Image (cartoon, rainbow, N blue to C red):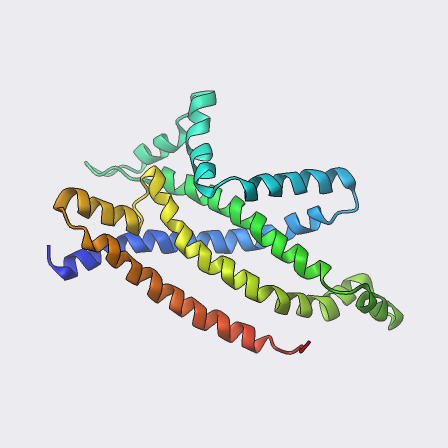
Length: 231
């Protein structure tokens, strides 16, 4: 195979990596907010259950969570739902891995939503009570205080840790390889097994480095634009 053919083959895998990255970010980031509010709830049972759930998700390796979501329905209930989805999308002699991708997305969204929730919680709780009280003195409602005074400060404070999690996310997409999802590392392993080519496995690092570099630039500009409060 020529270099261009290998590059195109790896690029197809990286598209799957980008798909996992994008869907996880678009779904996990908003989902983290209600989880954060539940973990700060004054209703103790909700707060306790949420904190335990977040503790479990953050404490168990993401790869194991992928295995649980992919294999447990079959082991406990005899439901090969993901394999059925794979077969449903099979075209000709080529087996689809749509079901595997869905299982990976569920694991990633839940995992990162919990991590994002802790970032949100930390950002909200870092705002002093005096700022809330000052807003109330000015005649603002609780929602107005949060929207006009607290929220902007919270966003600024959570951007750096969120940036780290987002950069980690693109690298974690390689874990999808554990259930045979055709992301870029899987594609490189195919080349190693079928063509005895090892260098594409190392070349995958170039894809990650370029994308992480672009993310770093974009997130750096976002952080700079949000520099309306100086401590």
